Image (cartoon, rainbow, N blue to C red; front, side, top):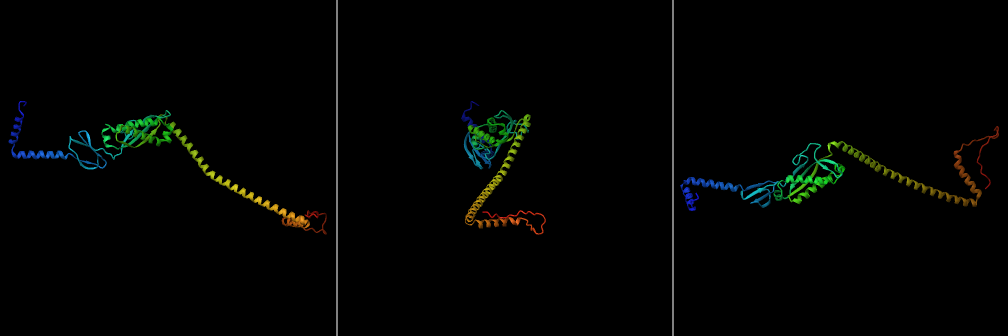
Length: 326
């Protein structure tokens, strides 16, 4: 074969083609044309509504952000199309078994050390979406593993800076938000084109060995909060009533004071006017005062009529007789 020249090879091929019957040559040409047509038709591709197309030509991105619809690219091996689902919300379950386990057994989870040196078990679900298809496809080999690792790092950092009571009771939502922000910051530093939608604690519990003690503490805290709320409710109910009663008593006292002062002032003015009349006419004024008093006193007394002519013995009646002396 090595001894054959290029011209001899061409002659052999031409002679072989000439020896093929015309009908067979026409069939072979049709088959070849059909094969070429099918090959070029393999370049047709469809992008679904939840997808975004990325076309790669010889390992380099030729087009990205291809919208949903029917499109064409050069057939393999010239170009290749990737279709990441950018509208899909993906989930990573972070628990003791690692990512991908939807629900770990109750009382299990990742062991975390809190800021006050208590051990708690945490199960978390992280939701994320693709924000940059090109970075998502080529910046990391396993995006799910990266999200899971970033979530574990964020949980370790945030949980280690908080107390167990705050995590279990008062600041659980705040801890979730801080973990979400931390995961996003880590992923952004790697530029992997992932946006964290949410990070939620599926379960956060103390270890089984000390769970009863935590329940007792939680129950005592609930009792404390209930008693405090009841006391505040009683205070809120009694204070307005007491303030209203005090205000009413103050108004009554002020009214009574004004009434007494006005009455005393009137009595003093009346006394002064009577004293002036008394100085001008003592007997007449004294008699008038006496009769005025009797008009007030006598209606309340029992009056007895005594017949002195037929009386036996001595009868003493205390009669009020005005003095003739001034």
